[in-house]
Length: 361
Ligand SMILES: *Cc1c(COP(=O)(O)O)cnc(C)c1O
Image: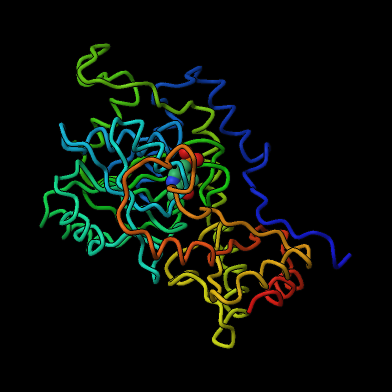
């Protein structure tokens, strides 16, 4: 029994019974999409939760980034600065908007691109980029103050890929915050995404872009767009997710605290900064010392503890992006092998957490 495999992630969405009252409302209204009543209520509740004056739903987190970049990127410029160390969706999104990713390094401490790294790249690049895509590291809320200052100083628009941070964001400025509502994220509805923004003009435009560019006059396409809407069924799941969110966050906190007490000062490994204090995620990582990586992985495998490098070794290691331009990536190269995703789901017992922690240096 004790050596039953511990899985790395077991997603959990609301049960059919929890969703049913909302489905009944769809039956009554016979509105199935096009910003209907359930999606609208979900939008308002998500806005209140995250402190965002404007919320635009999109079909997923990747298309949220695409729509936000299409609105914000400066025309007739080629590059979008972004970290190589991110989930590969970020790079796909940049390319899908017609921009070329320019891959940059991350800070070893935060695992994120910093304004300092971006400014150094601006000096090397020789031309002005169209935008910067700043990625939240596994759900840690991005440093909005620092990036606001960067944009004020350089004039380069910032878009946040805060895909895993939806449940941890408490305020949003004018730089759009793109989140994912995928089943593996803390605020998962299955598939979905959202653009959170304090600039209601941007929200209006973004929302129009999710529905054929209808802006103002009915059925008149005012801007180039697409169809990235979510259906009322997604809205129904979203409302049930928000109903259950307080209890879910208590559970995520319990598990996170479990890891925090077990990976305290007595271990050489560390968790990401602020986790369990200012933010929670479904994909917590332990960062192990370089000399202990191989032994740690061997122990986890031997103990039947499933683990994952959620972001691999950076976008530049994927064949699809092998040829994209890049700056110095030495920290990405050295830190990415050390970032190990730990098991995290509500079936983990204290004994399971002990078993995981025993494998960590
Ligand atoms: C999950 C994730 C995405 C993609 O979100 P989808 O909803 O799956 O499209 C993008 N960027 C990061 C950093 C992510 O973690």
